Amino acid sequence: MEIRNLKDTALPDIVASIAEAFADYFVPISADVSYWQKRLEAARVDFARSYGMFDNGRLAGFILNGIDTLQGKLTAFNTGTGVLSAARGHKVVDKLYEYALPRLLDSGITLCSLEVIDQNERAIHVYERIGFIIHKKLHCFKGRLQTIAVPGIAVEQVPYATLATAARPYDAFYSWDNTSAAVQAAGDRYRCYQVKRAAQTVGYFILNPETSHLIQFEVITGDQADLQALLSGIAQVIQEVKINNVDGSRMELLAALSAAGLENFLDQYEMRMPLAGSQE
Image (cartoon, rainbow, N blue to C red; front, side):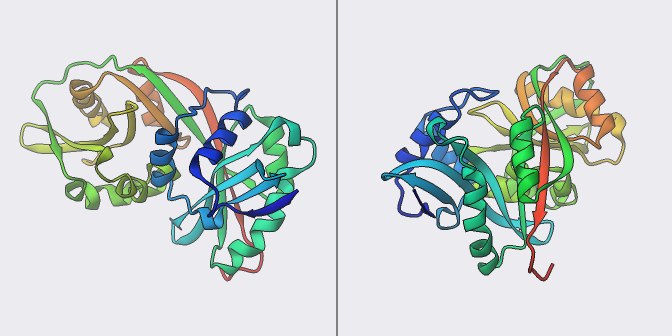
């Protein structure tokens, strides 16, 4: 077996390995190449700093790293790790990280991060063995918004630039695929909206119309009671929604989403590992 970066590996070959590696995963995984092209672009994946283990030319295991700044640190975010069933039991992920870490460090990376489903005890054990520790818990929701109609609510679609300043203070609450950098990397694939009550802007939300995912949504008045107004505004645009990775510390928001009839169907951990030898 040989380990090398993925810059010369065709995307359809990578997607075929993703689909096979996750065939028995906790949630269904798409095998559509166009979906993954958009998904990996938004995740800022750098194939030169993503790595695969090849068995007779076939991609048998991989780490797909998005590269960007996370809370001031140049970070490699593992947006997908997979091992084909025939290669399991050989510590492929350990070997991939053993190969990757010095190369990431040499390229200026000071932090590695990833997300893992909290029920995936085997993967959590592997990541802890490599050196990752749990940083925070994340909650995922889906369902039909059952909101109380709030009078005087108006929703206006706006360019992201209109929201950027208001959104920046909340960036620390969002996971890799939902940060402002992810929104900007997605280009025009997302729709951005302001929610107003009378003449006052109550909040905003950002929607992926292809998947019905709410990427970001925030009250900007400082009054969490305005969550009802924000959710009422969202429901004017879309009612069946999916929300990934709500920060576990946001108790009022979590309660409001449950009260709005959404199902907390999945939980994840964000795990982090500072790189030894970095100056951070």
